[in-house]
Every structure is written in structure tokens, then in C-alpha cells.
Length: 218
Ligand SMILES: *[C@@H]1O[C@H](CO)[C@@H](O)[C@H](O)[C@H]1NC(C)=O
Ligand SMILES: *[C@@H]1O[C@H](CO)[C@@H](O)[C@H](O)[C@H]1NC(C)=O
Image (cartoon, rainbow, N blue to C red; front, top):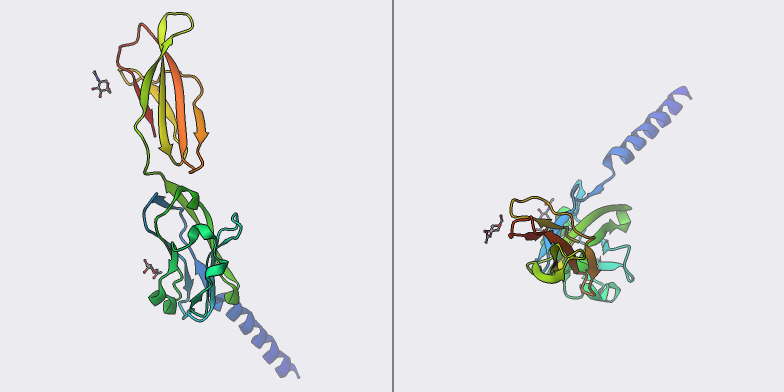
């Protein structure tokens, strides 16, 4: 009797250890993936220990979207009608990698609107990993400085700077000829329908400043 319960107990411990240590895990990158708009990128996600997942249901989603799926694959077939239309023709898996448990997502022609948190998920394994994507704009226009008239107290001139096509939101700084920071009014930020930011700012330049003023956005 004592022998039997010892056997059950050790069996149970073994079971707990197996579940704890042999449970496969989905692994994503520790850092956000940084991409430039229009680029083709890979969002990494793989199962360890590696095993063939080609026959399983594999899901990539963005929980903030509706419909949320970026890609759903069941037994090697992509379920196209489950996919959010904005990813149509742009998201795929690396078919040859599935046998190693690698379900990394290939995303082509990245757009600013693709930025966000992605979830890769294998329901059968009850495993998920989250991958953050940051998309930098490739459409930035160089800052344009224009004369905005005389300053309020007529001791200087007002300059305005505008720059468009930014993502993420940039910081705009005014510098004088010696590289000193000028104090400017608040930066106005507009977010366009394409998710790109236009920033503008005004500064009043006193006569004592050297005549070389630079505006930088980054
Ligand atoms: C998964 O596949 C992608 C695409 O081939 C590759 O870049 C990546 O290194 C693979 N990941 C692992 C862990 O093998
Ligand atoms: C103005 O300053 C910038 C930055 O210091 C420099 O690159 C540029 O050559 C200067 N321009 C003139 C006309 O002095």
C-alpha cells in the first residue's frame, strides 16, 4: 500500500515536471521590430522545442483591429476570408519553416497603419507571443522655413517651419547659427488620414541673433 502511494506520488511529480518543462513555448523578439514604410519585413515567432506545426491552426492577429486577423492558417490552408482586408495579399508564412515550428510572419509593403502589437498564437498548444511593430515613415519632406512677418513687438521677425510625412511623431527644434536652442512656440501637430504627421512651429528671432537659423526635425 505504502509502495503504491509512493509510486503514484512520484508519478505525479514526474507529470508536473513534464508539464512544466516540456510544455512548448512560442518565442517572439524581446525588442520591437522597427521597419521603414514600403519595406518587406519578417515578424519572428517560433515554437521551442521545434516541432512540425504545418498541420495545426496558426494565427496572427492584431487585437486592436476588427476583424483582428492578419493571417489564419488551418492545416496548411490560409483562411483568406478571416483576414483583415488591409493585409490582403501582404501577409504570409514561410511554408518551408513550419516543419521546424517557425511561424514567423512575412509582411510586405509595410504601411504606417501596420504599426501596433501583433499576437502569434497556436490554439492547439495554448501558446501565444506578442510582437511590437514600429513603422518609420519614408515620406518625410525636409523642413521648409518661411517668413511669418514682424514679431509682436517689432524687434524681430517671425519665422515659421513646417515639415510633413513623419511617422512616428517627430520633435521640432529651432537652432541659431551657433547651434543654440531657440525658445519657440508650441509645436502644432496634425495627423493625416495616412497616419503621417505634419509638424509646424513658429519662432520670433531677435535682431541680436546671427542671421543663420536652422530648424531640425527628427
Ligand atoms: C524563421 O524563418 C525566417 C524566414 O526564413 C528566418 O528569418 C528566421 O531566422 C527563422 N527563425 C528561426 C528561429 O529559425
Ligand atoms: C548656417 O549654419 C548651418 C549649421 O551650422 C551651416 O551648415 C550652414 O552652412 C550655415 N549657412 C550659412 C549661409 O552660413
